[in-house]
Image (cartoon, rainbow, N blue to C red; front, side):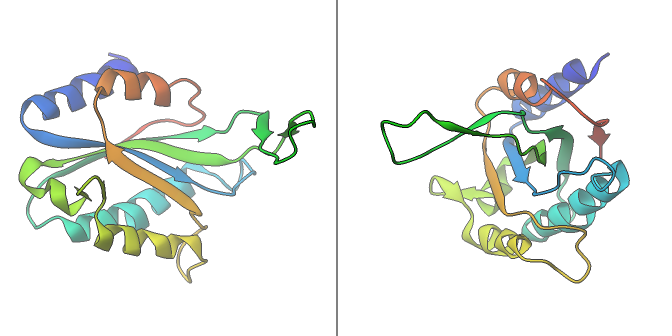
Length: 168
């Protein structure tokens, strides 16, 4: 079974069991492939991001999570206010995470409530925007939102995987 089938099967089954499934994107300013080593990226995901999410979920409730690391596309339009200029393009490429979170439905409001990320979780993750003594790098922006289609999100995140999947 390939990664696409594994992720789709797992998270579709979790949805059928009544779990709330969320899409995750965590952006970094990391350009260097050597700095974005699998061990460093795994450490940030497990020891920093998932630890913050786990604090929101009562023990011993399960928290399912998986991620991939992707290098952004090479050319991205830079939005300018000048209408008569040809759009500028950035050649900067950064590594970022795409992933899944799944929690039991009764705990979904600890992740997502009233159409937005739970305030306590949001406030906790905002701290990633600044350097931390033990954090390997900063996360300047993030997005966590409910998934409507596991298949569509899986297809999107596996379009150009640059490192191996982590099945936590």
